[in-house]
Amino acid sequence: MRTFSLLKDLPIYDENSAEILGRVSDLCITSDGKVNALIMKGKGLFERDRVVPIQSISSIGNDAVMVSDQSLIERLDNEADTPTYFLHTHHGLFRKPLLSAEGQKLGLLEDVYFTEELGTIIGYEVTDGFFADITEGKKVVKTEKPLKIGEDVIVVSIT
Image (cartoon, rainbow, N blue to C red; front, side, top):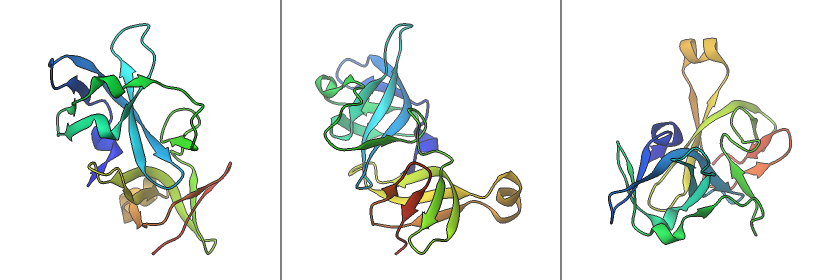
């Protein structure tokens, strides 16, 4: 199990050539609650963001992400067949209110917990603000059901 905050800014290497490809900048999340790719910042000045599909990643370590098939990496294209959401960029889900299906405000989305092998999201870290985090700590909302993502809020069914 991993959180995105542990992956952010990790270098991404091609395991065959040992060449650095870029750094992790965001997560790509499908509407059915799976992480299907990492977003990579290019290493050059004019390099655009690129999508690193989960199936091209051979391992995720504490210090780097290793890619086994560089040919699967492609430029970021917002016209995907299935709705795709991002955690931080492109009007992302970060700090969006998280509500239960019963209408209870759970907090603001701060991070996601996922299994790196399958990309399945197993929990969401929420915050009630800086002072509440200090006194009470951040909360983790666990669910196996997909999110319902709206313009203003995210609705989750708690198991």
